[in-house]
Image 1 (cartoon, rainbow, N blue to C red):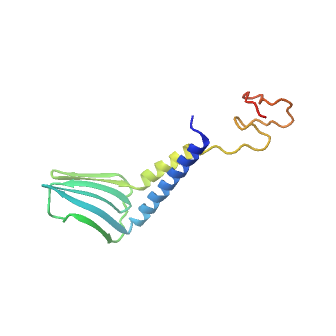
Image 2: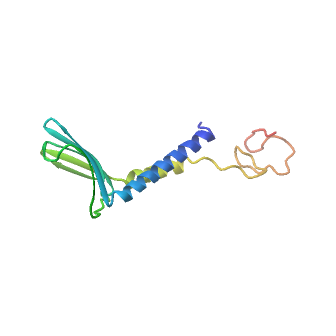
Image 3: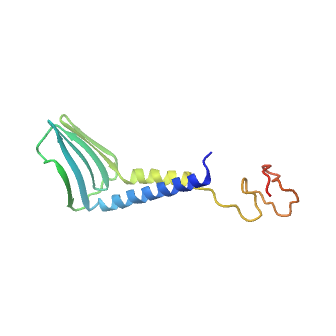
Length: 144
């Protein structure tokens, strides 16, 4: 079982990562950034643009020079996963809202438990007001 401190750390980390992805999705609606690398007779592309993460590989080496670049363009959002395949290349585009939504769902699932109300059992939440014993009648945990 995961303790409270670890759950809190995991919750905050996934929430922060989802906010970063959301910001990237918004920013890449107007700006695009990519890294192009020639590898012999092939060219690989990894980038962010149109609100998506893009990965591609092409047999057309030398058409686009190797290096990194950032440019501004009119937004043309990609809302769905797409794969483009030709005989000499392929490209996958993953909209950034998809991993953002997955991270938010994960953050909700691992959220740390709330602190129990006063006079309630911290293990099960049973109301311990006016009880004479130190043990919870619901779950059996002793409270001193």
